[in-house]
Length: 251
Image (spheres, rainbow, N blue to C red):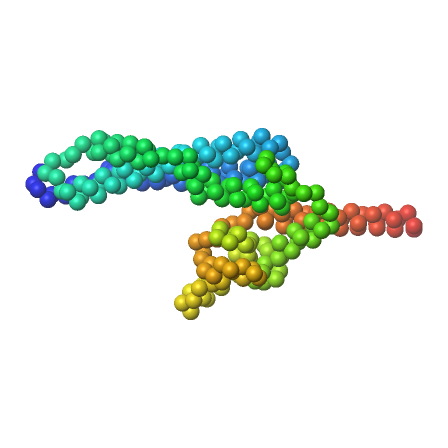
């Protein structure tokens, strides 16, 4: 092959595309595992069931790390060959394996703990236990007056921007506060056009640069709001039924 000739990587590009599709399947699996874990907490299931879902998340995180390393190894190999422009086609398999092994040698448990979706899983699980007053493995939640607990929960349901109960709450990964999705995104867009930063709308919060990329769905809070609504409707229905029965007896 003449020096400087370009090597075709069409088949490599196809493989990379397939690997990235596999990555999307892993992400979907992690999303499903998160929802199942939240269902288990909401349904008062045994802690062991929730812990088993956490193990599943760790396994997914490990697969995601391995896949990321393999993709990185392939991309770095391609860049290296394009940069060096060798006269003969090198052993791609050997080069990729060499780079992959180097990346894998740097693995640590913290890699899995820092996986974005695993961190989201842990955060939402913690919030879910708070919302539904569950006791975690490491700490006991104080027993407080039920009326006070309900009042505090309802205050958390109110968006600091609209001052209305949230329908699609999103959580800020930086400061931990939640807002109505449409309201906060509208503020971010408006301030972006003005070339200004967005301060967290929560009173007392010092976070002065809220970004759209920092927002994640607050599934735990949404479930708590929906649960409160169901309880309210159930109470109203019971009251209506009692009133109707009383009316029939009196008549």
